[in-house]
Length: 244
Image (spheres, rainbow, N blue to C red):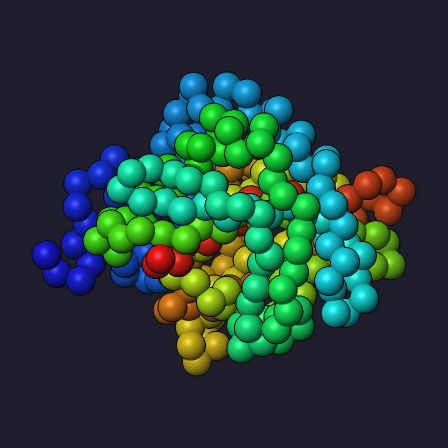
């Protein structure tokens, strides 16, 4: 099998894996993601999406910002299946996160209801299928982040406050859960020389960005309210895979 050959997997996921193996990133629109995840897994999507209304404030923002809310969980993915790990801190070195890295950051955990939700489980399985195809089915350390970025008229929300970056893992999936009353939030992908390789906006629930974290960098432009008098936010699920 050559470097970019993909073992047999469902067609939609195979396409994503092939794009990742070639360009180092892929964009999957909502309709394609919905088909891959399946109607049964998404039947109660609204209850899953509503869980973003119950995220704790991220108090570790070195820029002093109070625009990010989140929950966090870690899992082991092995041949025997999935295992949720005990609550633990999220850590990134300053090499990858010069703004907030270098410390252990403890966040409120993802709830059991979310961790067991059919939509959540289907997303994890889809991600694992894609990343296993590229990495010859290793064991994985998987981290999951529920993010809400809030914006105000005079304080834009920063989905990527650290700027263009890598996460210090092997692969990243960013899946849009919802946008409310916001403009911008453009995702851009850059090579190691920082030249731009792609640009798109996650606008519809299930729109997804897939990233080979070793090969490309990614970032998202600040969001601003469309109507300054109304709440404005961007909700995403970020899932990272690192070889265990």
